[in-house]
Image 1 (cartoon, helix red, strand yellow):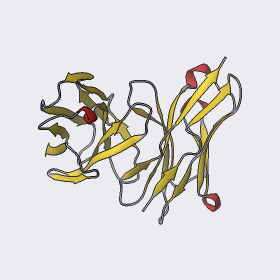
Image 2 (cartoon, chains in turn red, purple):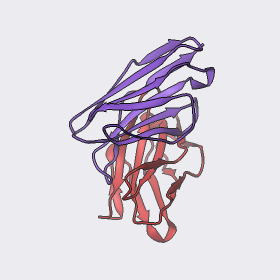
Image 3 (cartoon, chains in turn cyan, orange):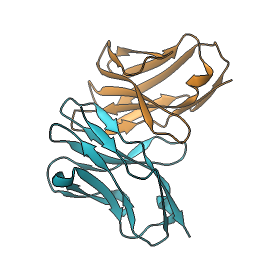
Image 4 (cartoon, chains in turn green, cyan):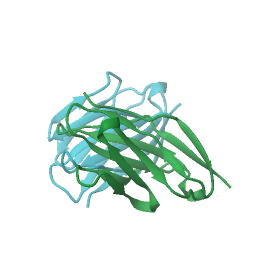
Length: 112
Length: 112
């Protein structure tokens, strides 16, 4: 069975600082990995996805994530945080059975 | 691409009343469909999962049920709401097993 662990339920950074949101997965088969963002009172939007092509994946809004099989990780980064990045971020894994499993989410706060 | 239509946006219902939330999908045929619930400040709880008409998997024993009467229609129901049914309900669609989920804008349900 697959699972996702997001380390740190709350992350706070200053505007302009590096954003690092951690995600580790467990899967018995090669995974498909995703990061989503959720703004208050809205549904989730796809930020980026890994589907076994390049290990470094670029997404929207300047975010990127690196798939590291040896570490079973898929951490999300952004070089310089903007106030508009404040939101809830979810990591998710699909397997070839199709069903998505989500982490518990990380709330990102950006301080001026 | 997929568009998920979900309504209503907000709903206030008394304890013991029935519930029907509807979700429809545009832009893809035979999607996998999901109902999630999100409690305040919490992650996503998968409630139901469907791979086709009439095929429903229940993930959590509870006061809710789901039905899929048409390929692109997914309905969440309850005969008698409980206070614990309050939350943010999200419908999502998925084109194939390696695809990301597309989410609706959610329904904020308050049971009073």
